[in-house]
Structure formats: C-alpha cells, structure tokens
Length: 108
Length: 122
Image (cartoon, rainbow over all chains, first blue to last red):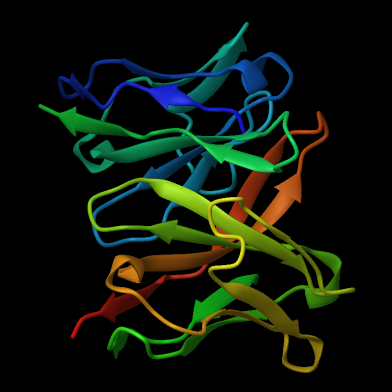
C-alpha cells in the first residue's frame, strides 16, 4: 500500500502562518483530506477536496496540492489550533485509504 | 443531524472476546460505508476496515485481516467491531467514521464517533 509522510512536529507563533505538508505518490492522483485532533478528542475534518471547509471550520484553514505534496495552511494561528493534524488520501493500491503519519502543531 | 455514538470504554483480559458498537442516526444507514480506525496510545490513525451496511460488503486493511470482524445491523443502524481473542496489543482507542467520496474522486471521513477505549490487561 501507499505511504503518506508528514513532519512529526512544527511550531508557529500566535497569529502567524504555518504550513503542514503531506507527501506521497497517491497525492499525484487524489486530493488529501485533513483532520485536526486535540488531546482526548476524536479527529475532526477540517479540509476536503480541492479546498473545502466543512461548516464550522474557520476560514484560516486552507488546503492546496502540488505534485505529490498536499498542504494544510493555518493563516493567523490561534491557541486553539494547537493539535495533531493528519492527512488522508484515497490509496492507489488495492486498499481504499491511507493516513499520513501526523504532525503535532504547537502554537507559541 | 448526523451522529455516530459509540459504546463505552472496556477493560478486558487477554484471550477474552469483545464487540463494540457504533450507533448511527440522522442519515440513511444503508447508503454510506462505515470505517473503523485504530489509534494506539500516543500513535497515529490507522484504518482497519470498512463495511457497507446495505449489502454487508466488507473490506479489511491487510494489517487487520483475520484479526477483527466488522459487521452491521441495518434494523438498528449500528455497526460493530469485534475480537474473538484479545491481546494486550489491542489496547487502543477505536473510532468509527463515515467515509464519503468527493467530486474529484477523493475520499474523506466527514463524521466521527467519539471513540471507544479498549484496554486489555491481565
């Protein structure tokens, strides 16, 4: 099956912009979706498709894609954005899904 | 409102069996797949398998094939994940979620259950 690689951890100053990346061959064919997971909580979908935010997700979250890399950008990071973030893609093998390895975002 | 409500935390001994549930509401259960996701302590998300409640078609991740059984009961809009003989390494949080397909053929999970913590210890 495919793999999706994310940086283990990134930090961002309050109010600044941070980009989280996800790399993998399947991303050449399919958009990634992105999930925010705060400690002790279930993951929450924040971006899907080309750059679609579900209802209730702030517009400081945006998604983009180029080649084998998908990115989630938080523009003007807030303290409440501190969380783990995972990408998910449709797999190009026989399996339907593949998760990224996850990125811990710290807001300083 | 779409909701997925999972059964409560479980503490089991190695070798015991277990079946946890994911009760859905707010949509037509037989129209959408349900996926089960494992998260071991301090680790990332892993998809385990999916089921289409309409026809009970099931696909397992190679990592979980033969280790768990996924089922669904259409009459009560509930999906299940079960083990016949638990191991300590099954200790994890388990989530159910609803997979969707986007207009570009991408996949995403739009609604999640709150999770069921399974602890296996002697």
